[in-house]
Length: 190
Length: 170
Image 1 (cartoon, one colour):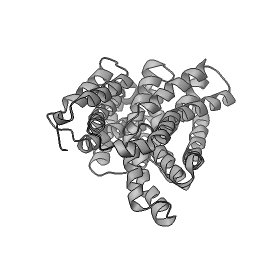
Image 2 (image 1 turned 90 degrees about the vertical axis):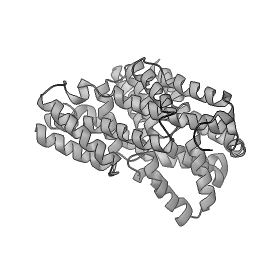
Image 3 (image 1 turned 180 degrees about the horizontal axis):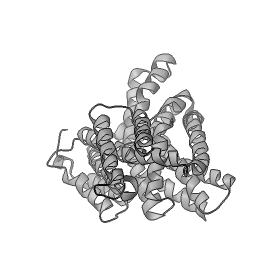
């Protein structure tokens, strides 16, 4: 039952995402591409590009798209796939929201608790590794072309380097970078 | 609702927009409670922006306030993505679209890699504690460990540790 599988998968993803959108992308990538094979790594990257350009939290966007694609991949129709998208989107916010409502008050009092503070600080460190792993897993021939002195690989590395520096050093907005990279691809390969 | 529609690029882009709307324009929260909401949203699991919406809604109108705020927050983005998902399958075989995506893919990987540097600084990664994120990344990437276990293990270790063993600042 694909819906149940989607629901459980995204329920877990929601609960274990600490530290913002990119760590959720890391978890979704692991579950959707590596574990369940609902999309290829290439499809996942394409989807991320689209999520970056559209409004809304990237975690939700990714869940919605993954839910749609997972059901569509089974050969189901449009309506069934939309249902899959909704299942995934609801599942991914359900537990965190329930938890948040339940422990709002409790957390306020215990935020100063040294053990909890330690755990949360350690977690922030781990999440850095989580996101790094997601980036590493996407360094594939599907995204970059086969390594070597061929046109696609050289262009890909150049685009990667340019975007990395622009995003990290100059804090250019991701949406703008995506548009520029798309234009670059259109020009150099067109 | 408006906030959900106009935030491009995820979580942290939303903070200033939300602050202007919630604190300055509508006066739903004062500056201090907004900061409380912010820090709790970061500490709790889940999508950052949704956590923010949940708490703002809750403080205003209780549980139903939260539900309304979340719905407003995610509705438009979901509709957008659904439309894209539906039409993209049809367009992706066009040569021009394929070329655009050949340019986009390395850019996306770079966009995921770039915040790692900034996050490392905010999280307080130093040479002494860098083994933790490095081990986490290696376990997930090379050994195919499920990230969920990595998160759980970190939480458990943090809760069991004696607080005075903390590395880094208080």
